[in-house]
Image (cartoon, rainbow, N blue to C red; front, side):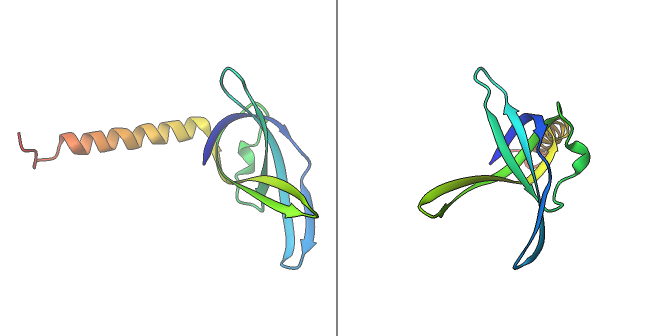
Length: 113
């Protein structure tokens, strides 16, 4: 799934050691766009994300997964990002992709007309 939102807060980085070795997690708070904006806490695990993008006020295009798990009779839901990029870069890349597919369709010599 993908979400475009404005970064509103960076929570403190968390680290620890588990049975698979050391881990690092950064939670961010983003606010969606639209008539009824929503705030969402998204977890960034490890070093998968370019940290220079994480500036309060930046618009981000976030690809994420949602997962719920049960612990002691209660359910907990995590929103984990697997890709974060600038919303402006993501929009320009999508526009380039759309333009190139249109050009290839128009310049195709096998058109029946």
